[in-house]
Length: 254
Ligand code: NAP
Image (cartoon, rainbow, N blue to C red; front, side):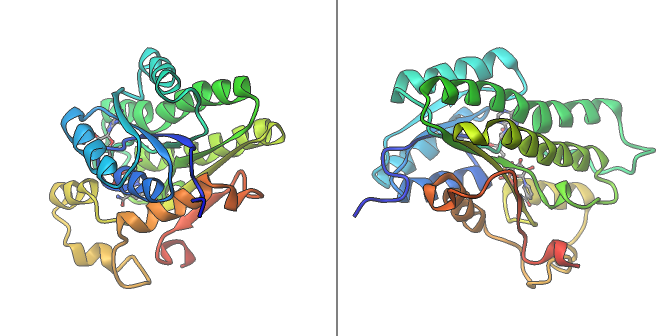
């Protein structure tokens, strides 16, 4: 039986950990060829080994998504390896320091925007250019967040970056869907990843406080986002473009 991502060459940024790694595993099970990119080389190489064990053709390419030349070179290397780029999950991101607007630092704001927002913009630019050159469309998913849909006290720069990702997604979708390039964003609720572990330790909050924000009564698992992303990347979502899709245990239903 043909799998829904068979022979599709897919790039995943921030693919060495958490949601990115889980999405890579979901895509591998669906038959994709995978380029994993991240700044964490050791974890990236380890992820690629795990993907190969699942039977996927996979490669690790180091790139910092906030640096234009590195993103351009990343897309070139993916095409060198697989001959094309069919799909991308622009997922690399950082948590900002947790501080109310008055106390937040300019340095933290600039870094958060550089990675979470400019990083997605740079990826979109180079990925869509490549997909248009190939002339057979493509599917791109950006990681926004529930923080791209609602505010969060103490998370101003993060919230701004993720609202920006939703805006970039809608705009690119309007510009390129008629040419066969679909662009969507996924908005995870609170998912158990190393990022959330760091946030708990930085803020001193208990895990229960986070669970209490989730109507479903638990935190999400990375695989629950990964499976949704694999669907958005596949042709099963062929009429879906420009959306900000919550996968959030009811977080934004309140
Ligand atoms: P994670 O476990 O920390 O994974 C993020 C990965 O991205 C890490 O391997 C990290 O490397 C890498 N990375 C950081 N900066 C980068 C850069 N400039 N260029 C390339 N790679 C970079 O976090 P996660 O929870 O899976 O988060 C993935 C995405 O989901 C992020 O965009 C995040 O904002 C979003 N998200 C997460 C949640 C959640 O609850 N976990 C909810 C909503 C949205 P290092 O570890 O070396 O920094």
